[in-house]
Image: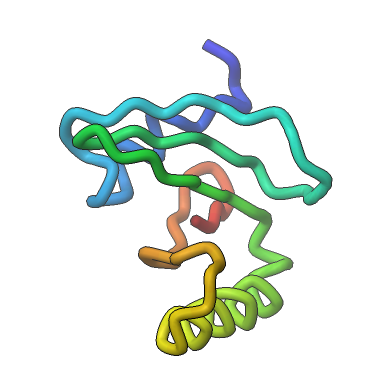
Amino acid sequence: MDPTDNRHIFMEHIPFLQGNTQIVPIDKGYSSDKKYRVTKNNQSYLLRSFDFKHYGEKQFEYEALMKMKEYKVKCSRPIQMGSMIYRGVFQY
């Protein structure tokens, strides 16, 4: 198993991902975030993980997206943000 492949860890520690869920890595984009396409109940989601040192800016981004959601702006719709510790710290 690839030591940088955290899919099994996400499925164990993020309640939303438990159950019949498929997680596929996405190797595109310009950010340093690791991205995954999550399929659950025939719905697709984007899972982004990032280093803890970026937590403040990611929290700001999450809150901005939540505010835009309230105003019905067409943009990403965040579901949740959290953190977990597994051989270091991962954020989602």
